Every structure is written in C-alpha cells, then in structure tokens.
Amino acid sequence: MSLSEDFRLPVACPSCGSHLMRVSQVKNPDDQVHCASCHRYVCLWHEAQEILRKGPGSESEALIEKAVNRGNR
Image (cartoon, rainbow, N blue to C red; front, top):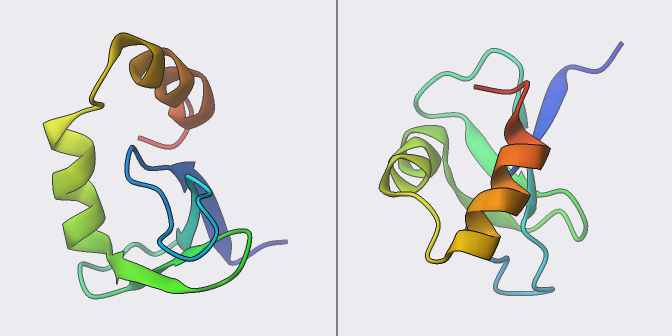
C-alpha cells in the first residue's frame, strides 16, 4: 500500500522536466509535492491545486492531464 499519490502538473520539474508529481494521500494544504522521477521538491499541495485550477497551457496538455489525472481529482 502506497502512502502517496502521483498526478500530472502542467508545469514541469525544473530539474528533470517530468510532469509527473507525487503528494501524500492525505493531501493537506502544506504537504510537499515532489517530482516522481527525480524526487526534487516542487511546491506545496495548495500551490499545486492552484496550478491545476488554472489549467493546462494548450489543448494537447489538457488531453494528457485528463488521461493521467482522471482518478486523482
């Protein structure tokens, strides 16, 4: 059983360029979001939620995010 959940952000990791991020399943506003690939700290969960609310920058990003995040929202 995993205690974290992966999701996709429209903003890429500054270190490796991956869009796949990881957050604890609890998802408290101050939980840290890390890159699922290189494990670098990216932002806090409440900041990630705001990025997700703003939406993707393009139609292709929207399709990718819909496919990856379909069960996580």
